[in-house]
Length: 324
Image (tube, rainbow, N blue to C red; front, side, top):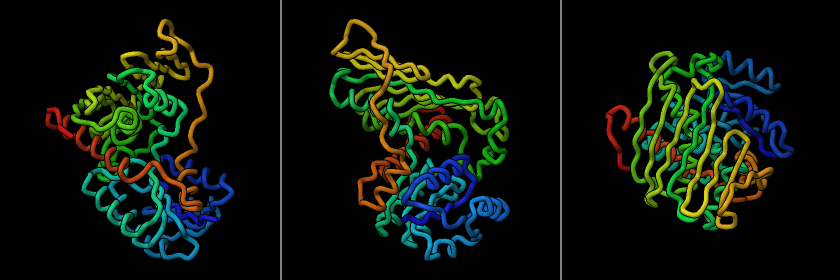
């Protein structure tokens, strides 16, 4: 049984992760830590476990084997380095950190301690991304030259994101650092190593000047180009995905997926069902802890994601293309 410390309820996905742990037969929540004592105590009472306001004491508890980190993104380095030094396995919400420098410090502590690590890159487990990965690896789409991925919702427009989501001292960024992570980590998974990036971000409704609408254009060493879009002000979500190769393509709007490959070059085929998704990032993490199974959502992917986002903010702020 993996005994889990929930390290903060700051992130909006913290409750989802707690629910996932409670649904697993080989893991349980044994304690809550939160930088906000009132919030942490209330959540601990709800979960029926002790609350510990001191991170060092929480990590020293004998009934804590592992930590799920949902603290403010700018606090990730402090929490994860402390967890690694205490010998606790780590699962973290994206992004790993707001700077590559902080990612490297986290990675050094985790590597030195040898604990199991996983970052929640949930879309890499999705049926669509796994289906596309299979097509790319098989060569059935030919040479991939273009990808478009939009992930958007109306959290700011309709006011359902918490007010602290717009506190740059804690969040570290706006929509690009949050929802924009999903297109950003999916692109190199399918296209390889990024070479340069350009980005435009702006603020329409978000308070405190936080970016709520963003587009990034990324060129990869393979010469493929990705257009990655995200928004907190899209009332109909309007998610879409395109992956184009010289001999085929995949296009998805909502749940409708169409494909053309070398096997069916003359017409679009609508897929009624995709191949099975991979296990969730949480399940992969637990399997890594319990069975020593490989955890694919690792420090390298987490650091690359932060690097791309950090350079995207530089591009927007300085009005230039940034080499990776």
